[in-house]
Length: 361
Image (cartoon, rainbow, N blue to C red; front, side, top):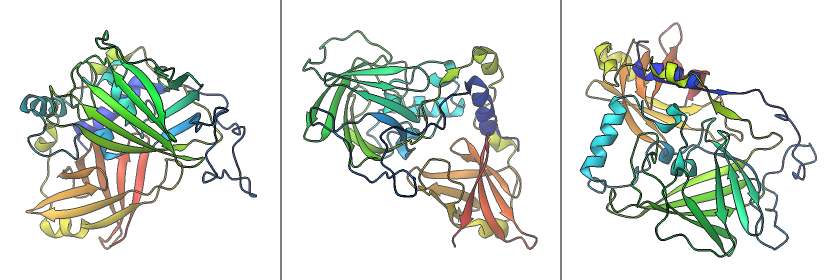
């Protein structure tokens, strides 16, 4: 498939290479287990010696629509026109300036990022006066819970500055002082140095945590809004170092093309063929720990195929062959048909391999 979007994923995989890790299958000490030996993730949440919930552990953040589009719940006009234009420019440019592609920290994007090796996991180390969050790409955050206040005029930094306090069993984290070089999401929504965030972490039980993030940046967005994410404990493994390759510059030289290039290679698919693809598909190949099955709704409108990924939104697919389509959030979609032309599965195409979705109706 001649898809610039798919090419981007291949190049991105060259830029950041996970290194081989020790203790990748080491039993987690203190992890509650069922009689079978399987982790009991619904056991009560642990508590620190001071009685506060203990958030310590290795957490796998679940990818949500906000990782791709932090403004998914905002209304038209609540994002300033210059910012919308910048997002369109970055999308057309295939995200070449994405900080991760240049081996730069992701800043506030770590709060909602999920489903990627570089930012999808975090290791929390909790002490009575300081909470540290470690990321696989060797970045870190310090959250001071010693009573100090945020600086009124901080020196901008990649990761910003954070202070926290407890409201009952919820950790509330206030952050500011971010520089304006990072993105808020993979789509490229910008922020300024005026960005202020409030995170709320609540450990529901041993294995599950809810995360709410409230964002305020009046120089870009006309309202303060809140997004949500979830995380689950990653049992019996360790944080795996994920280092940006020294050859990133050479790889970026081959990061060529525009998003609209897919339109140049678009092929015409008969309406009756597109109609066969319409339906609901549920994920079969689970890669994200516990079975959290995504669904994709395929519809046809005015001779075009659309995919609606639950929790992320609806996008138009661009036919590159009668069965292969680009435009699915930087990925490809392939329909697997039997000898009679009936659709068996939908495949979400990744560099690491295809993820199948079974057809429900």
